[in-house]
Image (cartoon, rainbow, N blue to C red; front, side):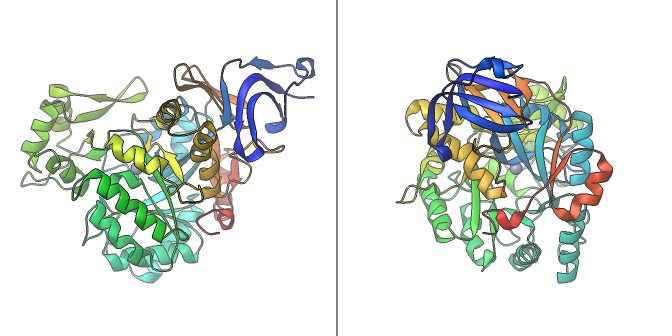
Length: 473
Ligand SMILES: [Zn+2]
């Protein structure tokens, strides 16, 4: 007896060597069976997926569903739940925000996703200062686990620490087996390939999630090809210590905040200007927006969208320059190289394809990956490895990323004619159909330290064991 049968879909499950038309039986939210034919009368609900691809749900190891303190970006990232669910993703690592804000957002605007959150380190907000003492860092790690985060992110492109402090934070997070991610950048090096060059030494003997590798291969120092190759070589060197992802959207996300002198405050925004020959100040931003190079992120009808030209300038000015902006600075060349490159024995060098989306309207991981499949650069099996299985290993989600009997019935259905996800399920419940989010709330992924708070939240939760994650294996 099944609760749900997904019939006649083209099932792609490389871990179980399934590649072809099969039926998938789901019982109590778990995968019950994959067979060439399951008797439809054995279930009250049968969905015919003739012509559709059925794959383990996309696990996004880098997206944004909350803000660190809610004070810097002037936006509510909880809209990201619906936005990312509508692209077919089923599990998200919120990288990074604030677990207490994430959970409020999930209650208000959730979309039925599995969500883990890590806390972004902002001096004065989530960590005492730019020069925290060892015991202060240790306490932050512990406190954030209690708050329901699975770890921390060092946001080097926005709130950089010295190399030494960055190292100390990694060491303290490792010590408590908390997730630790780095957006490259320190007081000494930028958020680019030069910054990435320093990260092996900063990592020392530790473990680290190096976020959005594509962001350091934008051709600021050398060519995009040279920087992509260098990034891949650095990852190869740190193969047993780093986990990595890259996203495939052309647009980035940054902030146009300027200081009293009219100069841009954030390293990432400065890079966006200089890479196209604009001044790294108010004039540069204004011209870049008027030229249509940049866009401003605004909320409309419960989603975040991009606006261009004079409208964008008006919004940026009305927010006194403290406004989320996007620039098309990611090269498709680096996206292609970073996504498809493998070690000689066939394993991908970069573990996973992420969105860096959520509340940023660039949740294109699935559709861009499908375009690489259509192009012949990835097989369907490889697409599933990068979208689902590898990220499940990264996070230690042993019951996800495959359709083994007893695995969670987290499923993404893709219509290859349009190259997009058209349906998705979390624990056997449909959360999206035809690009519309159908579910509220969500499933909070925490560490055991967060249990007390998760109980109080009243939301369903699941305890992760990071000793099983690739970060700590
Ligand atoms: Zn990000």
